[in-house]
Length: 141
Image (cartoon, rainbow, N blue to C red; front, side, top):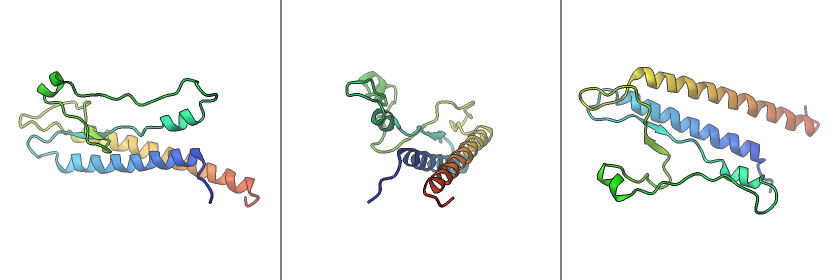
């Protein structure tokens, strides 16, 4: 049984996160006229396990995703704990809110979609280069 190289595993995880971001952007656009709808985004994937894997000697500093616990005061203001396993969160970088409470702007969503497309193209090119190097190393290039 062969294991997937960490670089490939990281790129795969990143590409899945970008696909999820595209889905969330599509939901935002579809709900751009829904009263009270709040724009959502996807948090970046957690690559701390890859960093810790290559951290070196035992006891060396590692990187971990910070965690937030909802306090009573935060809860009183309407904050809620994120759903377990979900990386979809309310988008805090919205540029305006309409009188009906909807804060989706198509311009912001198109900019976000353009960024996802650029990132996906870069990741795809890195993946292709990695596969080419692996073929070359195996003498199949």
